[in-house]
Image 1 (cartoon, rainbow over the protein chains, first blue to last red):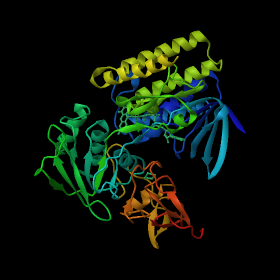
Image 2 (image 1 turned 45 degrees about the horizontal axis):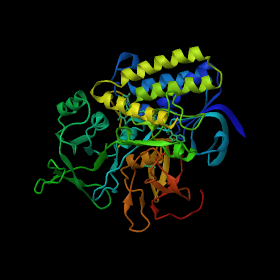
Image 3 (image 1 turned 45 degrees about the vertical axis):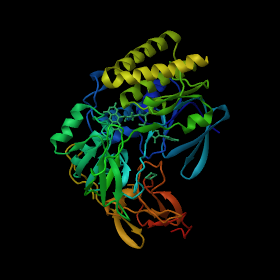
Image 4 (image 1 turned 60 degrees about the horizontal axis):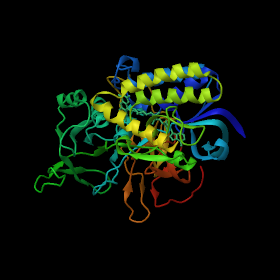
Length: 364
Length: 105
Ligand SMILES: Cc1cc2nc3c(=O)[nH]c(=O)nc-3n(C[C@H](O)[C@H](O)[C@H](O)COP(=O)(O)OP(=O)(O)OC[C@H]3O[C@@H](n4cnc5c(N)ncnc54)[C@H](O)[C@@H]3O)c2cc1C
Ligand code: FES
C-alpha cells in the first residue's frame, strides 16, 4: 500500500498552505484533490481581496493561488489530482478513486481541508435548468469562460451574491436585479455600492415566488415580505431572466470527518454542524486535523492561516519542529487569525470559534 | 456563450479544436474543458430528465458535488459532465432516468 507521512484532503487555500508549512519542516506530504486543477475556490476569485495587507488584501484571489502552487512545487509536495477521497478507514488509511480505479493511502497524519458546498433554496421551479449556485456561475465564467445565461437574477446579498453579480457583468451578462429576504444588505457596503452604480437594483425584504418555464428558466416572479417574513399579496412582479443564481450561504463539507468518527458541535454562524478541534486544529481523533471552511465557513484568508496551523502542528507531532519553534510559529499564526476575526463581520465569527474551542475543552 | 473579452482576465486565446456529438448533433468544443462548459457555450441547458416525473435538469454546482448534470457519455450513464473533460469525438446523450449502458465508442 502507498504510504505518506501527512495526507491532506483538498488543495484549496487551506490544504495548500498546510502542505507548504509541513513540507518546509521536512515532512513527506501528499495532497489530494478531486479536481483537475488545484486551488479550490481561489481560481474563480478574480476580485481583489479585502482585509489587511499582511493577508494580501488588494491581491486578486487567483494570484494568491498561483503563488501557493509554486511553493508546493518547489518544496516537492506530492500532488494527486483527479483523486476523490471517499473514505477514511482504520489506521489512517484513505480510500480514493483516480482514473476510475480504487487506491488506498496510509498516512501517519491526516488533514481534512475539503471546504464547503453551496446551499440550495426551495421554491416552485427551483429544479429547472438555469437555477444554479452563484459559485457555479462563477466557476463557469471565470474558470471555463462560458456564460451560463444572459439575464440573471441574483438571490442573496452577502459578499458572494454581490461579488458574483459584479463578475457576471464583467463577463458580459445583464444582472436584472439582486434580491434579499432580510430587510438589509448582508455583505460589505463597498461591494453593494459598486453594483448599484452599475445600475443593478437591490430589493431587500424580497424573495422568489416561483421560477417560470418548462424546459429551462424563462422568467421569475418575486414578491415582497413583511416584517414577519410573510409574502405580501399584490406585490408580485415578473422579471425577464433566463438564469437564477443562488447565493444563500455555504455548508461545511463534513462527510469525511463524520465518517472518520470526529465529534461535532452545532454552531449556526459557522454553517451548522462543525467538527470540534483544539488550538492545533486537531479533531477529537488523535492525528486527524481539519482546516478551512470545513471547520466553519469563513474566508480564504482565515482558511490559509488555519491550514498553516494544521501544517505546523502535524509536522511538530511527527518531530519535524521542536516545541519552541512550533510554539513561536503557532503564536504568530494565532495573532493573525485573531486580527482577521475582528470588525463588524469578523466579531461574530470570533465568538463562534471560541465556542468551538470550548467544546473541545469540555470534552477533555 | 463564450466570453471572448474580459476586463480582468485576458482575452480568450483558446479556440474550439474538438467536436462532440450531442444527441446526434455536432457541437464545437475545446479539448480538456468540462463537457458542461461546451454544452452551455452552445446554448444547451437541459442535460437529463428525472426518473419518475421526467423533469428537466441542468447544472447546479458545477464542481462535481450535486450530480444534477449527469449524462450518458460514450455509452456510460451517470457521468458528471461538469467535471469530465472533453475529448474529440465524444458521444453524449441526454440521460432519461437512470440512463442505459450503451456501446462504448
Ligand atoms: C464569490 C466568493 C468570493 C469570496 N471572496 C473572498 C475574499 O475576497 N477574501 C477571502 O478571504 N475569502 C473569500 N471567499 C471565501 C474563500 O473562497 C473560502 O473561504 C476558501 O476558499 C476556503 O478554503 P478551503 O481550502 O477551506 O476550501 P476550498 O477552497 O473549497 O477547497 C477545498 C478543496 O477540497 C477538495 N475536496 C473536497 N472534498 C474532497 C474529497 N473528498 N476528495 C478530494 N478532494 C476534495 C475540493 O475539490 C476543493 O478543491 C470567497 C468565496 C466566494 C464563493
Ligand atoms: S453540476 Fe453538480 S455535479 Fe455537475
